[in-house]
Image 1: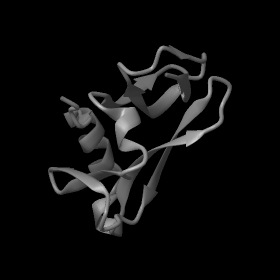
Image 2: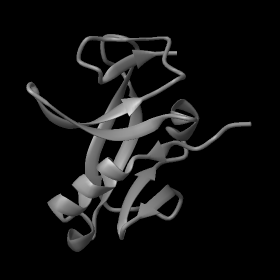
Image 3: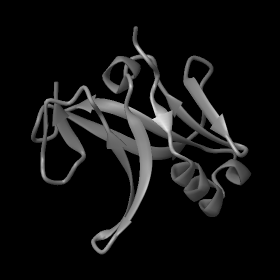
Length: 107
């Protein structure tokens, strides 16, 4: 059984901090071909589309398109604050390897 990705409370809290819903935007998490490991994550504020999977909490929304969804099955979308910077991160059990930047992976 394929489980949809989950989004941490920390990620939703960050969306609320930046006012995504107030701007009518959602956090779009997509998988694109490319990057040094074969696939890369594209993470941006975007307008939700009718065919997106919507993950809602605290009035904020994360959306994933139907093409990206199989690549993100059972993944966790989180927000990380480290010395090198703050960013949304994907913990993806489907990725067999990833590059050092954490935005590129292979399956």
